[in-house]
Length: 413
Image (tube, rainbow, N blue to C red; front, side, top):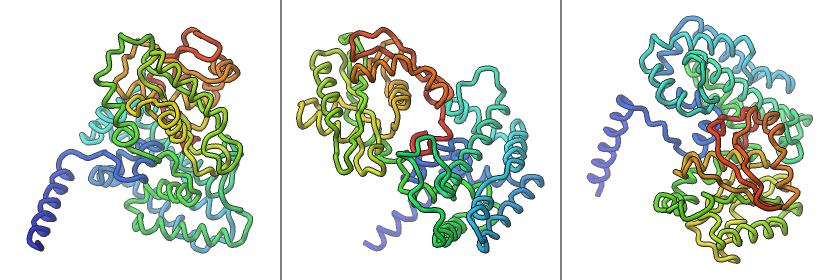
């Protein structure tokens, strides 16, 4: 038995060695990877290729920045106040500009970097749809966004800065307590285990942001991933064998109504909207239902709205699981539609066929006028609206802009 184990370990080691020398495996391994990939995709690609990152960081200007960055982080061990820790944890503006520009300068001179940008980064559309930008400009933009987004997390979940929606997304700690500084030093010590030398200091702030999100119980972006292999697997497989020409619409998005009482799994509004979705499904308006909503209301709830609505549809309304897709991440109506647009684009739904969204009349009224809010909060509109077919249902189609990361919403980027 011991010999068999040794052989299996040897084979596994050879396979891993083969992968590391050949193509890079970019698939997330565990929730931390999912969190990084969703929030900082360009940095995630670099993280997954340690050979490339060492090549890129070898230039003298970059090495000098990282040495100083590493030194500043280490000095936080003697920080007397909160601001000192925050400055040590974050990138400085001049560092962000220099690193992004110096790394982008290596495009055209490093084949692995060229392949990463052309084959993975640009096609992902995670930093917007490429129109007239050069690869160098796109990569520069992506890196700057990543590094600034990491700083944002440090400010909010390390420093207590107010997030976009403070009632549901605020820090879990009282940053004015003296004991909190000791807590931040524990964060520093833990990050040092991941980043032991200045040679990997490019990931210092990223790992600090990840730790701060974790201790605030804010790894929401990673929850239930990979969806396509777990909660959404049955419906994803069913999409491949569906004759969409038999239905007026490709899918039905049901907007949630978060509970107001702590400990309540599903609100009365959530039940009524789930019932509305089930009626439309059995009337064959669409072959699939998307339930969208994360752990949002009330503050720090332990319930995922999409999961609770899915249970209701299956157990109470008799909708088959293979007809239900969930988005357990969205926290707002804007991201209900954006995340469902991503599902439409990624799961093989017909691109030219309208989907529909249902909710209360007041909620659909808001959806009809939500374009300005999307521009303000996301920077783009991730859908195209069609006609309103009733007081409580309106048509929409997905736009590729939906892939774009929202850098100041780390719980659902």
